[in-house]
Image (tube, rainbow, N blue to C red; front, side, top):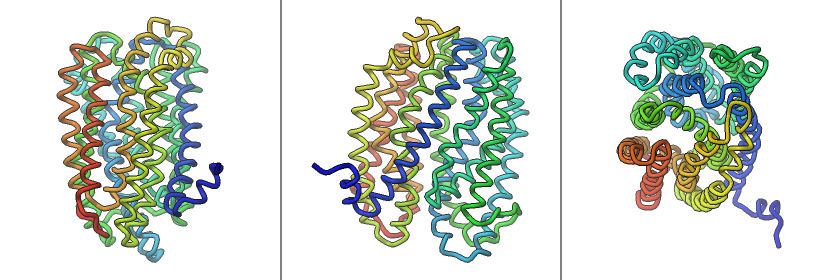
Length: 449
């Protein structure tokens, strides 16, 4: 019987690179998610399922969706560009990084200002189901989440720079805001308002952004002094690809807000219940699929740049099958352990046994997405490495359409659990589409945008 290390040594070098990268990401994710779980435990202990948590969850989702969407789209197209740029001169890399940093800062400032100005209108449109006290708390929280738009963009670019070098410490630092919120909530004398959540969020984002920028500058051997301009040769292809990718990313980004809107119209505390279940589910999603997905893109991009498209597809399909099976096992185990897990993490203080039953019920329906989510994420990296951004955007639009339809059909019948089941339907469609593309569309060395 071969040991695990012997099996790992017998894998192809590119499989080993993904496996080793995934192991590092999973380790960092485990530490980061542990910090996030402790934060959620502290919030549940001090606030319970309350108006403050409703306000925080609503504001977090609605205010961060556009910055996170931009980072998601830009990272997918940027990492292959940065991988290829490693073979260029220092001057060429410095020019591109500087211009990239300059435009990201400019965009972040604009987003921060617009977010704060537009928030009252957004509350009237999307938050009409929230009570006046919750809406007031949400307006206060924008003092933290408006500048977080700029910090999120800067963090995303620094993380992409690190991942292009197959360094995944950014995964651990994703937990910095959670750690700061945890400390602030625990040290707060009272939690009658959202002050601890507000200041913990803002300070956490500042620390995370500065830390990642320093690490990225060390990895690249340069800071990338911000400047405005489009003279770097990478811009034409990058802008074109990012524009196409952003269409699909925006479509997918509406999943979070539409869930919040649907939950806000289901009654009091539905947002909080959905939020607790979603954050617990994210622990499993992160440790499983995200670790492999984050490790795979730079490897597949490197294989693709060597002109070996067939091997890249073979590697991705094998990992997809392995991850599909792992997701099915995780879903079955999670279904059995859901009530125990929710009670262990949250049931104390203001979080009651009745809250445990409600959150566990919603979580179980969310677990049905695991096999499809696990299986599709590696295929997403394959198509990204092949520059098939139009296909990815088309699938994303179809995903959003099925998600919106299923929310309307299932939420009135099943309540908050129906929102989770709708997400599972969305990922099932996504997996079917990506498998079809990977199997039946010919791969080329350079891909097709």
